[in-house]
Image (tube, rainbow, N blue to C red; front, side, top):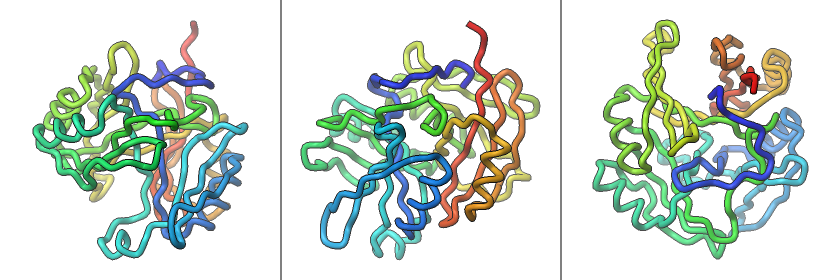
Length: 268
């Protein structure tokens, strides 16, 4: 994570997280929360009967999206969540490979108009993510800047199994380090950091496997205070990661988890 750089016009290589999307029980409430918290603007696009897809923007550039989950997702017990999308060259080939490597396809590959082709995958340890074959939409128009996506992190009970899966699927390599009592794995996509992975400590309680989205901020403590005033709940109070930054984990008012981090940029 220390290697993240300001990147305001990103180009994404295959195997890189390129997009994040919030599925929520209250689109209007979530829109209000995130636009106030991160100074985002939005545009709403109808995508079917009674369905609206909200593009979230920072300085006029796409930063992510949200939508209200349909009843069938809620009745399946799917909680509000941020979904991380990884870019692939071919969604069908990557989905088939994921299956061979032990994953479950939650949604088989399908076209999103001319925007792209995608699939939703549950890895062999239980964490869900999406793959994206770009059409007209290449991914976020801004990352690694304050109030935009900066990191994606996997919490899983089996880092060996997960590491083998993602290395097999995306060609990621792993760099394992001790951060105090925690063993932390950084995934690398060729020479670039691609994400992180750890096993939650028992004191964190029951934590289902998941990919967590991190947004960069200018001031972690001030942003946590603001989020709480807007109705969020803190699940991990601000704390420092040596040589990396200060981060916190939050639940938005509808219950979706996300994290924020004030990065300590290394000296060039």
